[in-house]
Length: 232
Image (cartoon, rainbow, N blue to C red; front, side, top):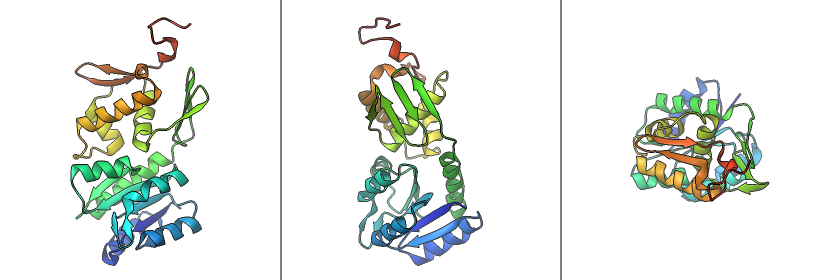
């Protein structure tokens, strides 16, 4: 049975979420503070998803996200917060969250997003190899010539999406739909910034810009050096 940790200081909101999530046959854990969240995570090492409010009595949960992600790359994190500006949502996602829901929310939407995230997290382990680059989907790990490449969770998911479907050109709208579930607060500019960061870490030749369309993974990038000369 999948395990979901609700981190929310408002008991009424916790009760609403528990009621709906238990209908999905999920095991629920609760925390009202960051300290309580840490205690649950220390005791329950296999939590699948955290539903996380940001403003908690003992601090801002955004500061805790990188630590949680560092301890468990496979855990799913959905922020549920009254903070609804573009900057706050982007910061939450950039800090390690997989999704962002604003308050007030529809409990059915929350359960739908939890189901979708669980489905993604349950993907069978796969390893994609493109010359010197190896991509491990479940572990959010990329290596290049044997060295680990540090990507944020969203950078990895975009790279994984493009590499897994290397024959397809993805529009920015399709990337938003696949990675952020069509979140209206995620703009084309956010996608461009993520692509730019990925290129800075793995090399610009791995992701092609298809003018007026979108982006495409170049699975043969390893065969061409920086001078455009074929290596094979």
